[in-house]
Length: 245
Ligand SMILES: Nc1ncnc2c1ncn2[C@@H]1O[C@H](COP(=O)(O)OP(=O)(O)OP(=O)(O)O)[C@@H](O)[C@H]1O
Ligand SMILES: [Mg+2]
Image 1 (cartoon, rainbow, N blue to C red):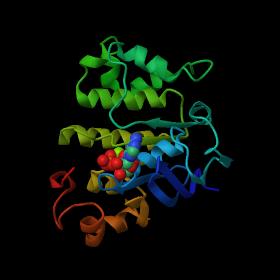
Image 2: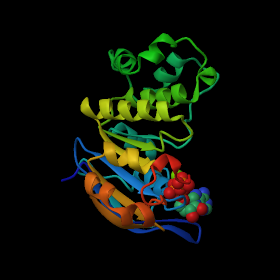
Image 3: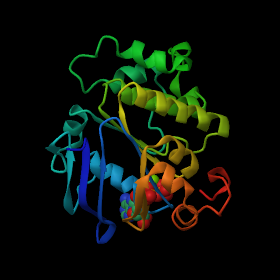
């Protein structure tokens, strides 16, 4: 069985259905990209998987267990962490305090947790005593990712980690995602930066209006001009960074 399996998921906000029955899977050790235009349902999908929203119907399985009926804090304990859109760090606390809080769901902090994330993000190690609200945008995104890694999750859900970052930082964040994956964390990545996401991911799904419109190996989708134009909102031949956000 896949590490994550989403079956016919329907999620609604009141009377408005945002997901109309989406199905996809993430295998152990993969990076899977979830792409789509604004409003396609990407964030809704992640929030439903991590237990922040209840689906109207459908099922979600993580590591063989059904999780769509479970509360968010139990899902985290099973090893699935979600870094939400917009970097929810505690801006008045220091870098280290933010990281220690990230591990609060564990009864005991893994002893090497801080060392591990500081090895991955040396920039944060240098700034461990700095108040988080004074970090740059890219550093704040690194902190949000590092905090999620404190509990050693099996699956990391990332919602638009490159949003609002300068190109050089976008490359750095994508490099970090690759490093995290190589160290054994499976990743489900939501991105509007489609070109970069497809270079990084093994497979991808394109959402359009709450449905899976296309799926396949990332390299295949990246070559497909129709995909780029129809589902990613990018003019043929243009780079993702030039496209509308
Ligand atoms: N709290 C909410 N109440 C009502 N409708 C919502 C709510 N959150 C999202 N929606 C609607 O659900 C649909 C999917 O939104 P969602 O945030 O999942 O899209 P998205 O693919 O993440 O878009 P973006 O790329 O802009 O982040 C949209 O039509 C949106 O307006
Ligand atoms: Mg979103």
